[in-house]
Image (cartoon, rainbow, N blue to C red; front, side):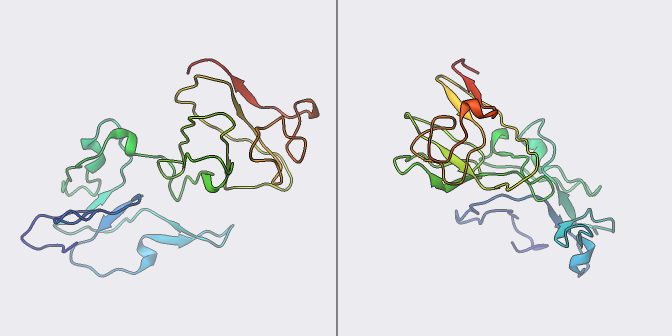
Length: 201
């Protein structure tokens, strides 16, 4: 985007109809300064990975900070939190387009490459949502474990038939479902727990 020009400004798009295909976690624009990356991020002392931090300096006249954290309405997604009042107007967005999976709150996502061969349903919304339309359609997630204790969370949006959600072996048969596969998946009677429901959420 061309900032500080006398024209309409866009984030995640271009005036002639070209749009970004992705997600924005936090957008900062500091007017009148050229800052280093350390003004917005730091190295995590535990993991050695780069992580964002909140900018604490001046934003200048036309500066803004968009965190997309207010999900009270679509218009709230464009609120400027810099204190300058340079708010933005969201376009062609729904409140359901906002996800809470971001660099500082990272989720295991569904892996579109690790699914049943007959499964033609690809994950949606940044690989966080799966819509099943046929029997024995499964999808594995992206974070694997080798030892220790684990837990996971999920939110059923709608359940109209039996659903099995759990932890399986990496060699499990992707054409079956957790608790049934005899070649790698955990069994029902092996002390493992699965969520199973035939109720509508």
